[in-house]
Length: 466
Image 1 (cartoon, one colour):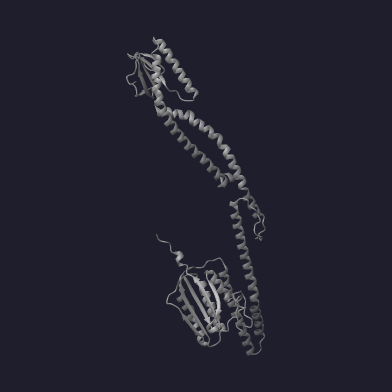
Image 2 (cartoon, one colour):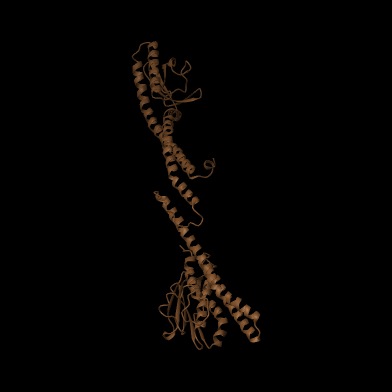
């Protein structure tokens, strides 16, 4: 019951077919009415005059009024029989009068004296009915033919003949068209029932592509869209599972250090032992906090959340990020230099851009020695903003450059502590901002040059003007 009274595709198509039939019926009806009115009106005008003249000549051959009356009555019966045979309303009423206005024959119930308004080409009203009069005068008689007014006549003709015939044909055609449409709808929606049943019976953890063959071309995009959705869900679940696994693996070491050094701290005898254990615990806690923060940033960048995209000044943002790092660079005699125009606008995710700059500069400060150099260059050209972070540190070998952006990857032999997530975060942030990142040699062939190119999407936000 709910299927027929709720919003369904089947009922919508059937209602559309019914409306199409109704509209077709109305259009055909109006066209037939116009055609009948146009053709019959002209035909009556031509034939009426000829008929009256022929009847006048025929009646003039009779010598007595009784003979004229009998002949006119016979002609009237013949006209009525023809009209009934053609399924047309009554028409062509014969009236015969003498020259002095005395009635010889009248098919209508007219007075015995000829009414004064009964004249040729006139409209005559009698008992609520309007007639068109056609008259012919012979030597002995005056003959009038009274026809219903054209509009009324054709209205009756249309109702009795054209409309009735059309209704019959449409009544026969409607089920012949409706039944195939209903069968087509019923068989056409069957694959959707199969699809819904297949999805209903699937296990909750089964995200493999659907292996349904849809022979209807319109349903194939539905299957493709569902399979693409399942693939995205599968990747998302694998990503989250990988994140949890990596987090558990990476947190094992610092947590074990914290547990061990806490035990050492509790059992230490001398102040030096307690101080060393305390420092080790603080270092482990700091490493754990840094790792957790890095993992949270990476998880946010991996998510489908698009971030707070807006237009911001890249130059001002980099200056703000470098400000607290100047003191760190000065303590190690590191040259930290920024080369940038005063203003470089960019439409993007400021949070992701912070992750790019912060991790690249932090990597440089971690890995280059005292007296090293880190240069940051910013530029814009043809709708793109370029950020280059260049240093003269130890650099990265050619074989490691392909893997350096992988998560938890650390260059072999590195003595600098870290989570192995910094460059992975940079790469993911660049991808989020629809940009690219390359790695080349740094200053004077030493160190690294990380070049990030980000598109400025502001032109896409401006509506075109006519």
